[in-house]
Length: 259
Length: 259
Image 1 (cartoon, helix red, strand yellow):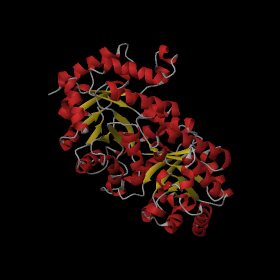
Image 2: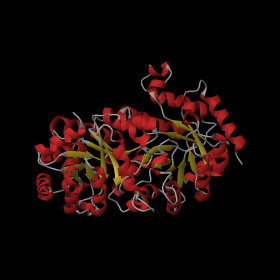
Image 3: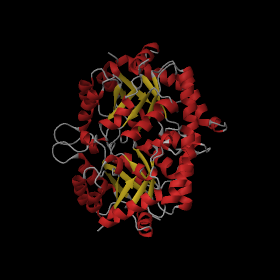
């Protein structure tokens, strides 16, 4: 099944636009997990079991697994396998990859074949031929960074004379969307700019991080993001006293503003 | 020792500006390696043993290891360990990473602590706070993508009204160079643009890929790159009948144009 259909089905099944980021930091895990042989996986399993009826996707960020070397990679593989077996919602690997053609082919293979992710985030800086190897997996989803949620987004994405770069990126990605498998990453921290991206994006799904710890505007993000937006939360759900209750609350809060 | 000093020492020791990219593709390995239990590492060892007196650095590209999952990551770790033990030249991990602050911290940890690379390549798209966690490792080198060697460099890096983005990136990176550990990646395929970057870069080292398979101009890259340029070759050395002879030849060819 194509990623867009898979995502659509998950949105409908759980009546949810919430994506939970699985960005595990060992130093923040409750002590009981640290006594286990694979604390990262077991913590993820605990979060997944608690939240899987309230989300439309999960998004493990590769950085937090790479940090722990082979051990971390093994936990990531186990987590994605577990998600595929039990959660019934797509897995977006947040990897922000991008390289010259044949290296991007290797990255695409790593994400889609080795790790078996359903979608991946990629960085547009190297241009079309760096993204194409990902797009060539027609059944998979590709979220291209457009306007990120961090303070540094002003350095290159937003300023400039004429059209700001993030809009140029959005326009190009729309042209690259030959197989209907492109999406855009747009942070929740600049809702007015989000509005401008949505105008260009049309039917492309938007992955919106930056609510919670980063202080993005949830209400505006949902309102402006329109029906193709999915909202990511990581730490606010992972480290909640009750991840299930927190995920349900967030899902319902998002639904209140869906149009 | 700081990366710049370490690199300078290697340049002097081997009288070389040549960096060899260790981008191993199992499908291109001579058959005798495929019979072994760790063909990637053994092939790298063979290339390293043959070329280590003719280079100033090695540059494994993470993509080609990630493609093979845990097995590939183990080969990468073994390769970097072997380089540190025997080659006496720095290891630049070509990873092109970049993420929002706390995720970039995890990537920096992965590159510098877990994998023990001496330098890393990073992507500037997310701006200053995405690069800072790498820069905070004052002894390590950070090469920021500026103008890449692929065709897609025209999509976002080169055009635009006013100053092209790759020059804006170069200017910003110069400002970020508080610890003297920044460098720039500038492809050999656009030598005139390289000239413009060098004017801005000053004392920052330049990592120049794109000669060989990608058709970059070696002579102009060396001439324009100035004394802080290092020239990367991957496939042309790796898959040469005699990697030692090819590396020596390339080194000498480069030296002929050094000023």
